[in-house]
Length: 291
Image (cartoon, rainbow, N blue to C red):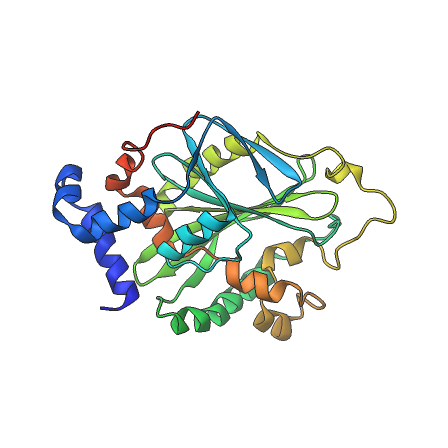
């Protein structure tokens, strides 16, 4: 059985049937839960760090994984990881959010965003990344379109958009937030089912109200002489896919994005499926709460 088929089988056993019967009767589902429980989860309320220059006050009822454990979590869900991401989620894993900081410099926010051209570039980017997914024996992933078109909030310095994704196992939504800072930006990638997008976006936005750059690193504290990024808002959305850069010209000069962008840009649908399965709502019941 292939890696994808094995994981799909595990998910099917977890999704269907009574929760207690699943945990007692299916070794594959139990093994999957055991691997998740073995990760070093941090429980809120707790102060956690992102990228070494920002802080999130993790609320009660939410969990956090550091970079090393987030990488393990993503591998369990057939996601490519940059190794720089941390994970935040509610305890029932109803959605997953990945946060990571890119120290590419101050991003000017005076650029007009062309949603149609960007969508074309994103589709080409994802098809190029499918080569790596196939090499790993994973199922392909495709961009269907916008769930939420790109929009920039000049007050909060946050750029947000959402894409509808499709794999052989179903559809899911990735919601993206870029929080601009003095020396770069923090990316937030939210993974949820399409039907849950609105509630998940509202929930993650509530959590992000407790996110802040440390003093000296906020967008407003930029000073002449600081590093300035070679791109604007469009570059933040497209993420640096080499195929799109060559064919559309949208990413001219953004070669620094290529490795990290293709590796970490999309989160596969299976992560969203795992996030909502009923069996995982008891994932943490056997763990002692952290002080």
